[in-house]
Length: 119
Length: 112
Image (cartoon, one colour):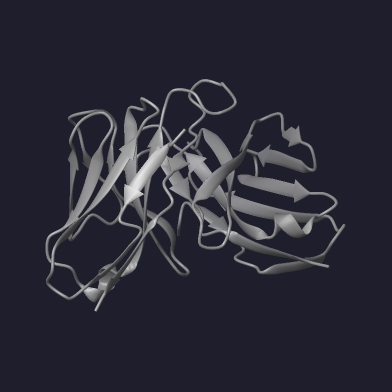
């Protein structure tokens, strides 16, 4: 049972380079999210997608773009990486029920994270 | 002021101790709350939901006080394996944040 899979797990970029973080979920969830986590800042929402074909900005969208390719996949792109984008990135998904079976719990299922360093 | 606030800790407690964390929220429209657990260098995982009537899951008890706008998590008989960061999460309906607002987390370290 894969859950949420994101790649790559580690990446080092030079300033100005571009890259795409890939995320896929196999739980048939409608909603998918991209967060970044920095020391002392907690989890901050970058973009989210409530359903296939829709995307919305979160708290910190500048410097990022997203694509909801289909129901399973939600990618995050850095067009011109900056040192301020050094962070741990988490993809997450949410369905109508959680692991308890309760409906609309708000439970997020996270990928294992992608550690990005921009030099 | 951030919508969900937590004491970052760390809380250093001996095995077997009882420890409690509080989390305050500023948006009175917040509908649901959750506690997530995050181990070092791992992804967050749902620990438990917080219901208005309070709920208990083994050694863990979560309470919601809407009048004072805070959520609590009580851990009894702490184990070494409870060492982690505990994230308080509020869920609002509507808004532009994908509905879920995370606190910055409270770090717990249980010592032998």
